[in-house]
Amino acid sequence: PFWLFMFLLEDDVHAVCILKAIVCRSIKIASRYLDLLVAVASVFLSSRHILNSRNLDALIYTSADVT
Image (cartoon, rainbow, N blue to C red; front, side):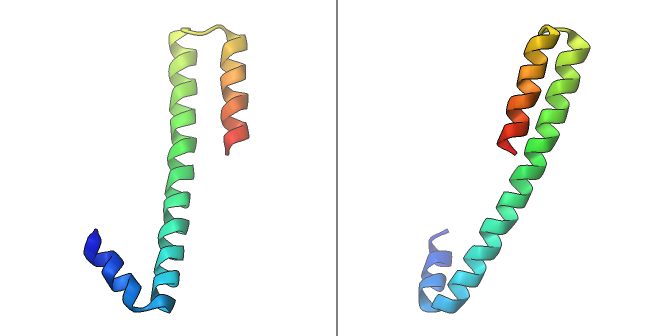
């Protein structure tokens, strides 16, 4: 929100700390959700047999590279 940025501009030291916390937190949350997404996707794909095993392996390896 706009007021948040105005508040951050007032106090630089505060701003850096808050920004760091926000970035670190969102990275943690994102990686958690990515792991969850990968797990759900692999279970779904293997249970439905939509892709053959070679494609599934490729998908798992690509997602492992991202994390």
